[in-house]
Length: 136
Picture 1 (cartoon, rainbow, N blue to C red):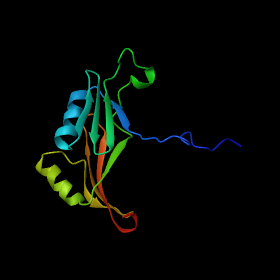
Picture 2 (cartoon, one colour; picture 1 turned 90 degrees about the vertical axis):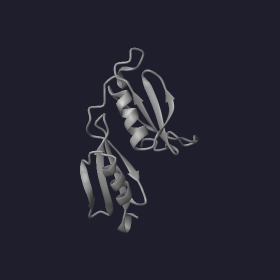
Picture 3 (cartoon, rainbow, N blue to C red; picture 1 turned 180 degrees about the horizontal axis):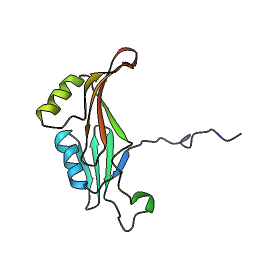
C-alpha cells in the first residue's frame, strides 16, 4: 500500500498561484488598479502580487534560464481564481462602474453561490462569489 502521509507532514506550508503571461505589465496593472493587489516584488520578467495574505505570481514566457516547465504561456482557459466576498452585488456594481467587461453576469446558482465573472488580460477567469444557503 502506498504511503499516504502528506509531503508537508512536518512542515508548515503556504501556496500561491502563478501564471506565465506574455502581457506581464497589462496583467499586473489589471490586478493592481482594478482589484487592489499590491506589488510585493517586481523584475523585468516576474511580478509577485499580494492581496492580504494571498499572493499571485506572474512570469514572462520563454525566459532563458527558466526550466521548460515554466516557459510556455498560460493558454487562457482551464483555470480560475475565486474571490469570496461578503457582498458580491456591491463588487459587481463597482466592476461595472469601472468599465470592467463582465463575462458571466451576476446570478444565483442552485448549488448556493451568487456570483459573476470577468477575464483578466492574460485570459484567466476571475470569479467573484458570495456563498448562500448550505455553502455559506
